[in-house]
Each structure stands twice: as structure tokens, then as C-alpha cells.
Image 1: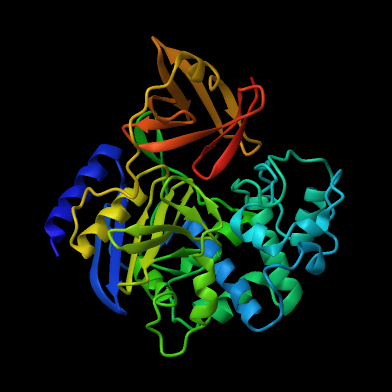
Image 2: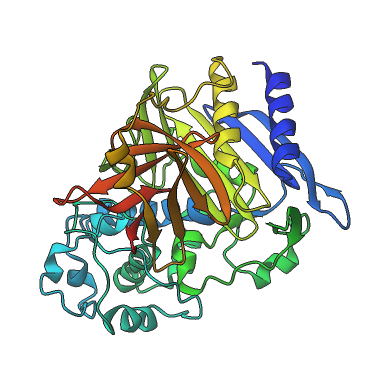
Amino acid sequence: MQWEQFEKFIVEVMEKEQIPGVAVALSKNGQSIYERGFGTRNFETNEPVTPETIFGIASITKSFTALAIMKLAEEGRLQVEDAVIEHLPEFQLVDYADMEDIKIRHLLSHTTGLATMERKEQLTKFDEHLHYLNEKAWSWVGKPGEYMCYNNDMFLLLGAIIEKITGENYQAYINNQIINPLQMTRTTYNLLGLQSFENVTTPYVLEDGKPVACPWPTLGNYAVGGGIRSTVVDLLKYGNIYVDVLERNIVSRAYTSQMAQPVHQTNDKSFYGFALQTTPNYSAVTLVEHGGGQPGVSSNFGFIPEKGIVAVVLANMSGVSADAIWLAAVNTALGIPIDQKRNTEPEFEMTKEQKQRVLGTYISAEGSQVDISLEDQTVMATIDNKTYTLRASNETTLIIMPLEKPIRFFIDEKNEAWALFIGLRMLVKSR
């Protein structure tokens, strides 16, 4: 394995994106094959990142919650086809009569049909959140199962279901059933508890072109989908659940494998399942992964079931290429070119009419905005105050250059774009 080339790659990415610190770890069949920290966990103290450094893991947390749901399914205490109201009868949305159509599997796969909602991180109890969800009519992008639209407010209801069925606090249940049995001793939901640990990162965001320290997000109920802080070493222990190397697995393969089954196609080659994204037929293996992002956090975790490989990348700055570093690490472990991509989008020439129909501003209630404009017949996208050139890969998909990330547009019966799909979220056209 040519780790020197990988290490050169990661240093180049860190310099280009001004990433303070990154930790990387991989294992094969339960044995560590690579662990290293890069950069610093704190610019002021210049303390180095190590494999034992604690980072936020953000939405990798979702797979812990999904695993807990699969454990309850294996125990016969629920089924993923159950209607959410069967377990949470107080879940009653305004102006929506068919509540029984929203299933647990829709929560797990972000396919409820509800658009992304305004975050309420001050809410810390699930009954408070249910009241918030029930108090007004929300925007829908389609019927349950029709579209995928990442929705943290729907996903957190899984925590409420876990509490209702087990009678335990959600976080206590995850600790007792997953984290503690795996001896993940440097993993916690508790922000106050972080103070008792040494070797913890400082989170950073990029402001005016420079990394600036920021506070840890408090999250409230959103901890169900993003509240764990951990290390790459601990996450290797967690990943071993999915590659069948534990003597006594927490959940059987029959149920963990369901999490990676394709539910909704996200691009030409990849699919979203239950809190895991799958890319089949990648150099004759399957990539299964999930990324995460919060203020001061970028992360990517995943595994290759055919090879018994688990890989983890954690960084202490938001909006950086943890997924690209993860793929380069996996490619190195597989012995294939380090720059091989999950998906290579073809070239396509859009007509003037096809370009015109996608122009406009697309927004979500969560605060995201994408502006699509035209400059000298070149389509441009402005995202988070950064403007990118776009190229077409087909008549409804544009590719962000040089990131090679797709934006897919949904066209209505009037031959106009009404929404776009980017970063697993649907944004609806406002003008």
C-alpha cells in the first residue's frame, strides 16, 4: 500500500483548503492498517492531531441511530414498515390527513416527502419537537417515498421512537447498547463531558479566507442525527459491526445489511439507504459510507463489506473535503489509482432553452440558498457566497467545477425547473 502518495495528497488538500487538522484510520478484518493524525487540533497551542484526538462526527451519528432501530427490529419490537404514528400517536401534521403513510423507513431514508425545515436547536425534549412539527403547515416536495430530501427534523423522530419503545433516554440507550459494548471510551454525546477529556479538537470555520475558532453546536434534539464526538480509532471499532469481525455482534448481518440497501438514487452510481450511502460496482466492490458537516466539523465514515475494510476521516473545519480524503484512503487500501472517483459525469451540451429553464434562486427553510445564473451563455452557481462555473452532464444535471459535484434539476409540466437536488437536499425555486 502506497501511503506516501496518500500522505502527499492529504497535505496538498489541507494546504489548499486551510484545514487545521485531520485524522485518518483504516482497518481490514478488524486489524488496523493505517492510523495517523495531520496538522493541529488548536492553532493557538499548536498541539498535534493524533489518532486518539476527539472530533465532532456530525451526521455519521445517524448510522448509530439507524443501527439502534435495526436492533429493535431484530428484537421484534418494531418493523421499519410501521407507520410512525403507531409508535408516536401524537405526531399529527397540520393539513395532512394520511399520517399512516409516513413509515419508519421514510424517516431512515429521508423520503417522507417533507421539505427541509427551519432548525430549532433550543428544543431539547422530543415532546417539544413534536409540538413544533404539529403547530403549522409545512412545505412538501412530494408524497412519502417519491423524493429524497434530507430532513433532520424528521430523522430525530427516530430518537423519540427509541425512547417510547425502550423506556430509556435516547442517548443512554445508544451508550448502553452500542458505544459501551464496543469499548468506545473516547466517544460521547455530552458537550460538558468533553471537558473531562484531553486531546480534543477546537472547531474552526473559514471567515474572510481564514480559519476562525467557533463554539461546538449545542444541537438539542438534533443530537439524534449529529451529536456524537469521537475518534477515528473508536469509529474503527464501530465499523467492525458492519464487516462481521466481532465475536458477538450487536445486530446481526441480516439487519445491518438492510441499512445499505438502495432506497433512493442520488446520482448515476450511488444510492441512499438507511443512514448509509452505497456505491455498488466500484472496482468490483461496494462503497458504503456517510459523511457529516457542522460548524467546525467535516467527516466521512464507511466500509467495504467484500474486503472487510473500514475507513474513517475526521477534520476540525466545516465545508472541507473529508469525503475526497476518505476516497483517496480507500483507493490506496484497494491498490487502485488514488484519484479514481465514485462517479465520472459525462460531457453534455445544453441548449439555450435548457439553460434558461434552470435559472433562478432555490432555497430551503434550513437556510440554504443556491442562485443559478447565466454569464455569456455559461451557467453559474452561487453557493454560500462562492460562485462556481457549471458544466452539463445531461439535460437536467449540471456539475460544479472543479468539485465535480452534481446539481440535479426537477422539471415540471410547464418545462420549468421547480426544484434542485444538491448535497442530498432538495431546494425549491423561489424566483
